[in-house]
Structure formats: C-alpha cells, structure tokens
Image 1 (cartoon, one colour):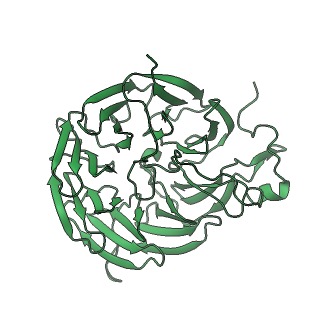
Image 2 (cartoon, rainbow, N blue to C red):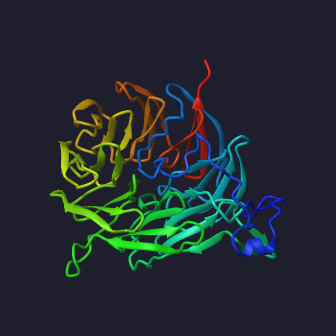
Image 3 (spheres, rainbow, N blue to C red):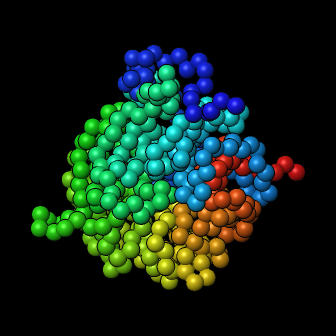
Length: 406
C-alpha cells in the first residue's frame, strides 16, 4: 500500500503557489459555529463552545483513523475546522470527519497542538504551532510532494531558540492562540510572549515578565489567554502579567505567593489563574484579587475551563478532585473524586476531562453526576468537540466518539 505521506490526488495547486505555501487566493475555509479551531476552543482559553455538543452517557467509536506513527504518551489535542480535523504529533494529519479518512499525512515536527487561522492571501488557512525551536506556520492544505521532495507544507518560521535540554514533551508545549489576523504565543525557553502576523509570521511585538531592565525574566511561560484587547500570561516563579494586545505595552504584573502558576483563562469577570494549591480570580484591568480558593492540591499543569458562570478545575491532590466553582464568588458548587492536573472541556452541559491521559470521562456540569468513561489504548488527548461528536487522539489513532444509540 502506498504511503499516506503525500497529498491525495487532485489538489490542483500550482507550483508557484506551493513554493509560497499555498495558492495565493482569498481564504475559502471560513469557520462554522461548531468548529473547534484551537486547543481549549478560543483565545480566552475557556474550553467552551456554546454551539458544540458531545456524548453524555454511553458512547461508541463512530470511526477511527490509524496513524503511521505512534505518538505514545505525548499526545496533543486535535482541532476542527469546516469538517476537517487537524492533528500534529509524529505526523501532521488532516482527516475528513464525514468519511473518517485522511486527506493527507506528512512528516511532522515535534510541536504543540495547532491553532487554525483563516488566511487573507492563501487558498487554505494556516496552522500555527509552537515547537521547541520556535513558532511555525503550516499550510492547512499540507503542501505537495513532487519528485520525492515536499513543497509548501511550511509557510513561515517565527522567532524562537533551540533548547539545549529537551525535557518537555509535546503535550506540555504551550499552543498558540489567534485573534483576528494575529497569533499570540509563548516562545519556548525564553519566558516571552510574542505577537505575530498570521500570514507571514512577522513579529509585531515581544514582551517578557521582567519588571525593569535590571531584573531577570521569569521562568516557564504557558499558553496565553486573550480577551477584550488584553493578553494575559503566566509563568514561574508565580508571575502573572497583562499586555495590550495591539502594542504589547505591559498593563500590570504581579507575583503570587505560590511559585507554580498554571495557564490563565480570560473571562468577563476577570482572569482565572490556577496554581499548584488553589485558584483565584484577578481583575482584568489591574490584577487585583477578587477571590481566592484553596484546593489543597498539588497540580503542576492543566488550566481551568469556564462555562455558564462556573469555573471547572482539577487539583491533583491526595484524593484528586474535579471542582466546579462560581465564577463571581469562588463558592464551591460541587466536587467529585476525579481530579488530575489536566484541563477540562465543557459542551452542552457536560464536562469532559482526562485521567492523566489514560481515561476520558464525562460529568454533568450542573450536578457533577458521572456520565461515560472511556479507557485509552495509549494515552488520550484533550478532546475537540463538534456537532454531537468528540474527537481525540489515542496514541496511534484518531477517534470520533458519539452517543450510543438506544
């Protein structure tokens, strides 16, 4: 059987367009209401699409598509745009969700989950990823293979530096976010946030956590959250900062007493910041604390989801609990014994969360009552949610999970 590391026949791209990363035409892949264009759904990082829905109780595998390489335990979430599912791991793959079949599969870089950006100049969109040596823009069309050489799969390479120590698996690499024609992301191993022009990778601004010219920058930087013209960033030790999305001007910064801070979530009430032992809500315009809740946990990764006035967060404590808190007050709504430092996802009244990547489970968002559980073959990714379907990567395959018919 011929390798799938090629485009399917009939892509119809000219060589000139391929050398530039795709045909130079207006973008034809507008997003729909049930798309999931980046990890955690939106630039704010809420993990919630009010128009999406997934299974609640019993599930079945609607289809599965095998990958040529086994991603093992370093799985990253897929993204969904216009009925095409994209995943980046040991392969860069695009899957037609209606048929459950790959459109193309090419050798990939070791990178984060992709973020889809509609293009104003190319026929297909751009998928921005963060790799250990920098930020990269991939063609959502996959490029093409001619005479044993591949053209057009990489459109641009943004700023970055090669790490001398490769200690972070791709599942923990912070993914980019997109607002309009700008991509915001952490630059690995620099403790800096950068804003890039989405079609070219041109750097618009770059900022770090340092408080003045004499101070050193903070440590590991997480996926940023963007809302209402503000970019929120967190990093070690205990750093939280807000930057103007247009200019990069720092609006405020503060250092929390807990050195381990996790990725932020931007909401209408402020910015939600989980730490190793708890969670707090900070004012968006000043960084002042609105509330703080101790979870008595020991979490080192994973972000909070926010939906319908509630915050959903896992603590990874001794017992391990998944919590639902009131967004305005921090008052607990419910807790269940299923807490690992992973990121919940919410859709249509259901919270989805993985158990350290080995199992996917569903809980009622209102009550915490359990729904289905699904055991992974290898390690399962955080899901992308579509119209009644969950899409996940499970080691050496991509799955579509749907509600089991009665």
